[in-house]
Image (tube, rainbow, N blue to C red; front, side, top):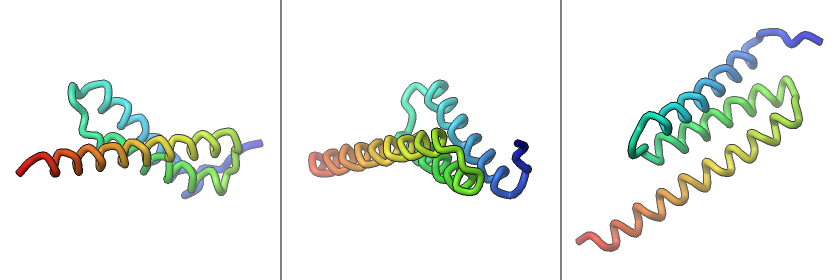
Length: 90
């Protein structure tokens, strides 16, 4: 079965580029910005999910759900740390 390269496939490719870019950023930066890292991963998971809802691949769709949850947890952690620092600083 052949999947056509339609707009949803290109959206998926953009999501893949986001996730690969976030991983490269994590690898190359000594102190990566968690908002860039997790935000890019979340955007990638969302874009891939759009593609996967049209061209369903259940294992990949479940993977993207977990990828998004981990990214959201990372963003929440970064926000908590930022709030804690704001409380300490005058």
